[in-house]
Each structure stands twice: as structure tokens, then as C-alpha cells.
Length: 82
Image 1 (tube, rainbow, N blue to C red):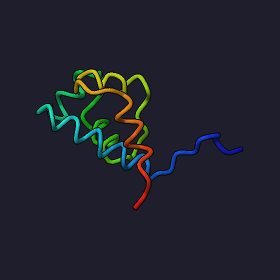
Image 2 (image 1 turned 45 degrees about the vertical axis):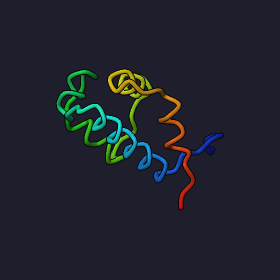
Image 3 (image 1 turned 180 degrees about the vertical axis):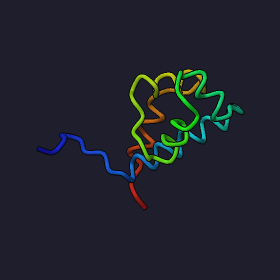
Image 4 (image 1 turned 90 degrees about the vertical axis):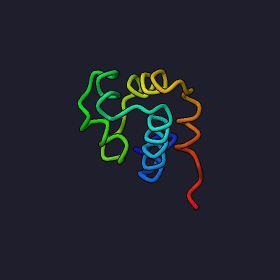
């Protein structure tokens, strides 16, 4: 059974790049973001590289820390492949 709205690995790479861009835009280190979200900095690395999928609650927290909205994350994941 396939998901009704499948998300490709490419989409997760786009989302990871967006996460990193947002984190860097507010001058937040991976270590600081990890502390804010209650995870390890290695998990932050995995999410930014799309090695693991970020849970929704952590995505919401990420957006809160960076002062951005979740719609931006969704838009990043839906950006068409060039």
C-alpha cells in the first residue's frame, strides 16, 4: 500500500537543506538546536542530511526556535525537482 501523498527522498533532502538554512539564519549551532529540542547534535545532523525523518513535534519546535512557520517547511519539501 502506498501513502496517499508519498514524499520522495528528494523531498526530505530539500527539507533538510531548509532546516539547516533556517538554523543558520538565526545563528544557532547544531548543539544549541539539539539542546532546545531535547535531542543530540547527531540527530540534528541526520535531519539536515535527510538520513532520518524529523518527527512533526520536533519540526514544530525547530520552527519555533528559528521564528519561522511550518508552511515554509512544507513548501520546501514540495518544491519540484529541477
